[in-house]
Image (cartoon, rainbow, N blue to C red; front, side, top):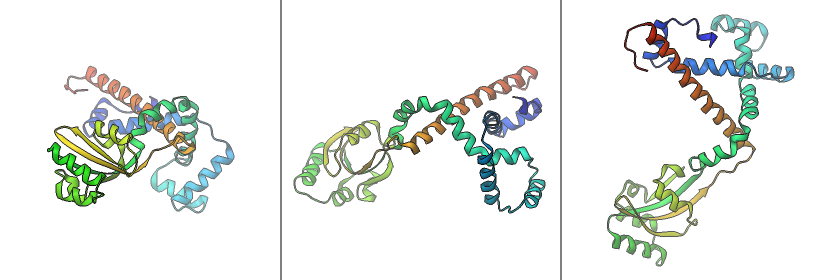
Length: 248
């Protein structure tokens, strides 16, 4: 990448050792990719107006002063101003076909759940507590604070709101098939018997907003992979030109 050609092997290694090389590559690679995305003149003007407002600049003279103080060129300002528009356009044009599969892969990390939990190592105690909740309508929170053997004891058994993916895979599978407000019979996970009741479950949907978010995530994932490859190439190049023993 041309923008990094100015870096000497010593500079590359210094950035690497301070964990800054990947950040630099990512930023420059993103800029190189998005600089090729065209934005119509009207949108550019709107973007520039919004950008200057965000940095507290009111006129062209103030903008020039700001550029002089920050050492940003006209091209830099144009990039900052149109970044979001260019990103959305590039992501939509290049990753829209992958959105559905990416969404299904990410769905468990996006669904939000709140549930009550009691866990005990005693199966018979778990069965008894389940029946007291399901048949005798005893308060789940009170029983959890008294009998649960996990940290949820301090929250009256309440867990969340949090992504469904944060739960143990077996627990997440059980919660996913539970009905809101209905306690579920004890299941065994890692030596404990768990009684659960879903309090609220908010699954995400692939609407326009989420589709855009998935496209941008796919773009970021692609950039990250390109960044890692380029980072490795630069470090390998440094290693081959010196005998400093840098590990890649």
